[in-house]
Image (cartoon, rainbow, N blue to C red; front, side):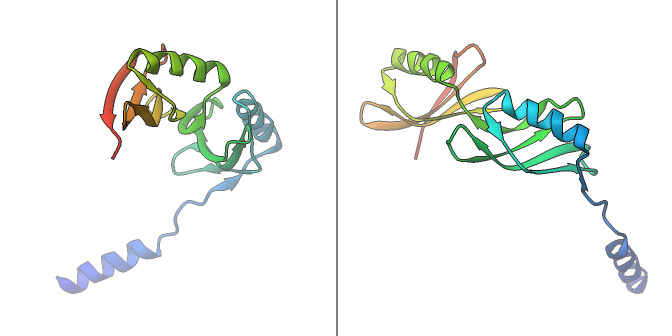
Length: 144
């Protein structure tokens, strides 16, 4: 029995995994357009054949660092985080002010479809906030 189990494990380890593939020129144009719409650019693009998604690694977004994204086959961003725009930041700041809070690091999370703010100052304490797409606060927790 042990021998059969070891043989099965060896067989499974020898099966080649599906490999990611480079994107085509047409795919690259569509991915770059989706990224440009949110103020980002990237060169490290590939198609993940296991997840059936395009992967973008180390996209540069409006001078705010690098971010990773995943796009579906309709070239819509479905996973990853991005910095907020100036207009979004103003709306986030207004929502936080109603709570007596300010500042923090804000991003939009595609996976959760929410804005996330870390390290917002409320009095002398730091908090994390989640806001929905209409900039309503849906959660507030101490940021330890």
